[in-house]
Image (cartoon, rainbow, N blue to C red; front, top):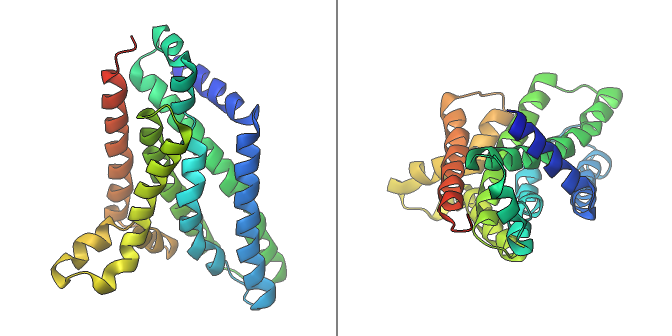
Length: 236
């Protein structure tokens, strides 16, 4: 745990010692704020629905931008060779980097809490529903972060890592939007693959074991892929 903690702190410093975290978080907050305020002031709706409905789509861009540097930058600079000569296990390196990305995600989501606080002041909201919606955002972002971590481990080019991660995340997001053109026999499969359907379930306060298994499976699957790929590299 000490190794993970030390590397985690290093990764967090790397994020906030460069402009990338500030730029990505600022863009995310500006886009989120636009959809929240447009619903509140232009449509006169005192709810989080507008923001919550678009947030998973934002994450298909946001998480790849956060994770694209995790391994790709070290591969490009050659510092990965130094990192792997230290008394660190491969899984410790991967876990620390993953947790740093999830922490940036959590900070970003936490900054949007101003939205429900605003609604509490001007009207009535369902606190339980808001809590579940934010829980769904965290699960969705954590799943996308695991995909981004894997994409960053397979290339030294951050742009390629971003594109690969975006494509995989977007495929999971858009799957639920294609149910109308999917053959009847595949609807249940495609619906389960869609991350949007699981997010919507949790947002409604339905904490189903199938949704938890879904998110855990994605995170676990891409963790194993990242570990296998990382361990197979010949830089040691």
